[in-house]
Length: 141
Length: 130
Image 1 (cartoon, helix red, strand yellow):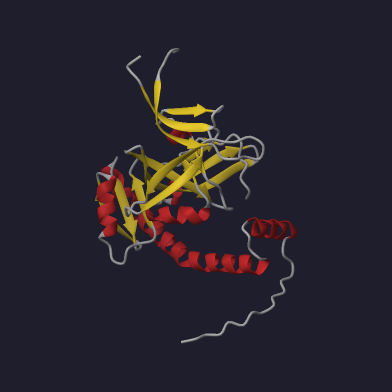
Image 2 (image 1 turned 135 degrees about the horizontal axis):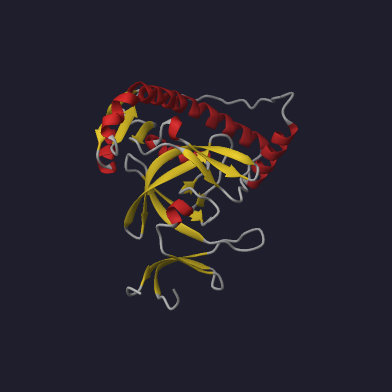
């Protein structure tokens, strides 16, 4: 597992947090009528879904919403949070990925990119230089 | 036509104190006065009502057709304008079908038959303000 080489394809500067900076990625999202939205999303490995958005931004994706019976719920420390769920396409480094976009059924929400999408990317989190990079593996090791 | 807008004073009783405090704090964070924030909230609430009506109609159409869809497992079924639009193999076909509708829908139900089933996921932190 050691000695792997990764080539950064695109890097984004960390954003200022309350105390410590946090990694972000920029992504182009398409709703299901083909309209585009470029957006920056904090990387959150604690969120198991694809992309969480605030309610106002989520409305852009309601043209591809799942039926209510297929909306998902998240277990959190403060109890379950039901979400509205829509389908969209994310374009990252030229690759098109089908993703779910979610927003809380109640409340305003926030912007996050979670594990369902992160697990399909090669990411380098370079903390000391405060850069999060989409990368490619070098060689076949 | 010129319409004069007269600012008016609004007194609202029995508002939840905690919610109002959070609302005021959010208005400050967004650089708005309280009256500007209330006007924005009113606009947002009013504009979301027709969209909710479309969502209800599309979900009702989906419930009506759900059993008939079982033969199309793995394909995308589309409901818009309160009716069944069709079943498609790819998202590109779904996009073409939605773009061909007139008027262009603001809401549609798109379900991958047999695969979109909801469920419970986890969110470790959950720092979201509700």
